[in-house]
Amino acid sequence: MNRIRINALLLLLCIFLPGVAQNVSDGWNKNRTARLTKPVFVYNNWSAYDELSDNIPLNEALAMKELDHIVRLKKSGVQVDYYMMDAFWFDVNEGYRKWRPDCWPEGPKRWLDACKREGIKPGLWFSTNLLRIGGEANTMKVIPEWENSVAEDGTTLCLFRGGYLHHLMQTLQMYADMGIKMFKFDFAYFDAATPDAKCTMLPADIEEQNKNAFISAIKEFRYKNPDVLFIGYNGFGGDMENTVTPFRKTVDLRWLEIFDTMYCGDPRLSDVPMMNFWRSQDLYSDHMTFQYLFNGVPVQRIDNCAFMIGTTGTCYNRALNAWKGMMILTMARGGWLNVCHGNIDLLSDDDARWMAKTQQLYMKVQQYGNISAFGSIPGKALPYGYMASAEGGNLYTVVNASQEKAKVTLPEATGTGRVLFTDSGFMPVLEKNIVELGPEQMVVVGYGKFSAREYDLGIEKDIVIPGTIQKVKIDVQKKNEHILQAHYIPSKGKTVRILFQQLDEHGKAFRSWGGAPPTGIKMDHFFNIEVKQGKRAVPVKKSHDKMIWCGLSWAVGEVSADDIKEGRPLEISCTTIDGNSEHCLLEVYEVEYSADKK
Image 1 (cartoon, rainbow, N blue to C red):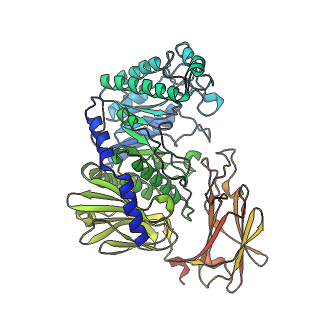
Image 2: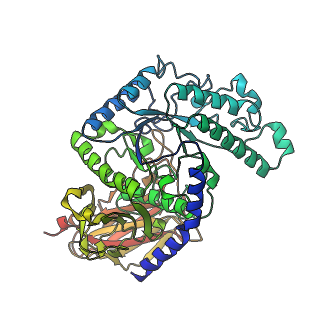
């Protein structure tokens, strides 16, 4: 516990510097452009379709189907304020002025009219200045107004020379006049320079001029359209590739002058190996939220972008797997832009009622409470969490990212608390202000008014936490350059958990990429776990055997106690394709689930 408390103090000293966040907020309040005045809930249709991996297109039928289901969910009490139309709605030949005729024969009119009728504010996605978005079919044609802005590389557009930026602002105004109330900007490249600028300017000056031109243009637009929100995505700062790179100051806080929120990365797998695949993904978004707090971005302005359900490759075909915990964490992080991506049609009416109840709890504490992070940096694989302090009580959302049980002290908790939500299997033990969690477990705990039964949110059935876990001392041997092996006799009645991670010569995890669906290679090709007893192959339960667009640095598998013959040694072989086995990590744990006790 001492190490956890020390980590908490270091993190709080490091990221919650009152002067930084307060100065940003003060400057924003004096700005006459629009800003979020309360938490909102946004539906984004990305991952209900996916034109970057599965080649599932966005069309009017899909967009309207999801809108129909939004209406259905709203009848059950779900709050939906905005509907963001994500990438590829546009005709690549028309400079964003027209919609794809094959997918939108009448343009956006039907969708816009339906949003207005249902009281939902529509939003639109734009590339900041990248011409080729994915494959060749999604490459924007350079229209005459953009020609003198084309950068030397031919794939981006300069923002401070030529007519592109002026034309883009006119386009935004055209859509604002049609009722668009939110613009999402993605894929910003501030090194874009026309050939003449490239010859006469330093790279740092090119970057600065591009940023200044964009900021000035958006400020002017927002002054004229104070009810339109802007949200920033890729290209506006942050180290998003992994969860092992040390935190650095990489976010230019000037973006807060024009963006209501800034996102901190598309949901992907972290570099913390976990048996619960979806919990490792949760941890990625937690890690990025902590990074943006470290960079001085106020908690309300961080869009963690983590809630993504659906049947496409962009969300790893997760459907509704472990979606409740994912939603709770999305809202517990404290950002005022709460976004749900994907196949909202998968949610039942019962799911909608649960979602509405969760929204009512967390969006109130977002607006009226004080939300802060505590514990270790998530990528360190130690416990961490979020505390929401509100009048009459505190609400804690905690994750144990380690492979052992952990007791976590809940800061400022007084009185009697209550477990409101957790994973199935091991039940967290709450004593005064200390909660004990199982490995990889998440829990929500309420104190004061939040300890009432009315706030109970139930159990995450898709994640099962073992009741016991014990690391096994094993002799790991290098069979060859790519294979590690271990032999040991397992304890009676115990399930065996195997963690394998690819590291470089400095002990840093690095990823392998097999590509996205439908032509990608599954990750168990890059990280293979095999277990034998004698000549008999023993089944290994694993969840990383997927095509994963973001790559992966680890594999975790379990051998059920039912499949292990008592008293006979297990032979464990772990193979890496891209790494050197000399540097890889192999750990074995014995765990016991309630089903193992017979």
